[in-house]
Length: 480
Image (cartoon, rainbow, N blue to C red; front, side):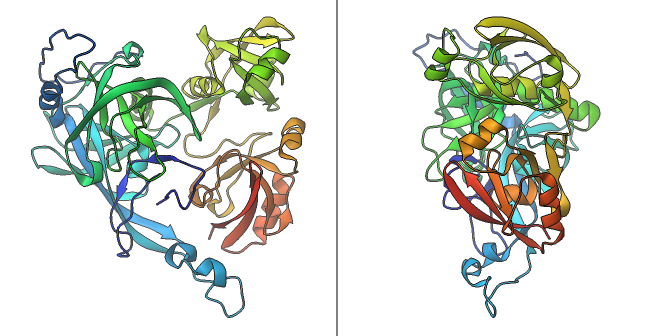
């Protein structure tokens, strides 16, 4: 699991609580459309309350708590010598040292939460809860346990759908995220640290929050106390309707510090419906790199406010290129929806459908201009590969790379390849989207061909030199 010590730059952490790893001890994994459930839920009546009075959380918990489940997972994961031996990174490079230790599979166990959305056993949870799981067990509040099947998961939005073989189960009621307001009371139910059916309450702190590495999800931010093990559990509004899936916390310690983030339920249902109908998820792709508009940029572009998404590069042959988008354009609206920040554009595009046509209101040369783009698609289970965004898969390295644009190269002050996406071993080693790959095993790389050539000569471990901000670091990645 990743802790803040292993990766200090990433403070947003997943909420899966892990058990013993390889017998070595315990560790913690840190890491609107209104839609009715398909089966009747227990009828509940709620009295009108003033904004200053907390809702009847006891009634909500009684009525819908039975639809919240505890999820236990077990499986195996690969660990490197560095994972098993903290001194391996120091002695492994020298003759006669303790290096060359092969990676091996070790047992993995963990716990999370979920909630029943269909009386025939369909359950929503987080993708990271069931990741790498070979066995998934669901426990109900009446103490019954079932083996669950993972129907599908989408790491990009961190949503997964699992199913148990049961009938006439209690279900939650789903609410309308568009009606949720900042300052409104909300309730979380889940299994923090394995403590089943724990209820905690707070208020909505913000909506549409973009987080580092998770720009495809417009998170609901709350001050509801959630901790490892709450992952996948429901977030209820004051009427007992689910409005989100508890997913992440912002923490310097690994525990709750007043900032928690939930996936909006309309996003989760969109993913759920794709999984149930097609068995997979497809996200749309525009093909641009964007950045925030600050006040200085707004002044230079003669914008009335520092809002929108500034296009810094456009991929050749992409939907954006075909629509006529250019570097220097500022996207202000998509289909009438205001784009306040670059994260708004990313989440809007990712949650659209491939082939969908969108109308872009952009700011170019001091004037508004409208463009129409037909969105491309991103494969659900692998990184997008195109002329400007190529995937390197040898040994399951898991990087999507593209050359730096002139502007990006100038900003980085270095030559290399931009890492647009990191999955698999690269992600586990700590490589992040936005890093710049400078060399592989000491060989400078300026194009994907050079990376592939270097990989063909590499062993089971490769040393990547990456630049992150102003820092350059070597990261060992196990690919064997």
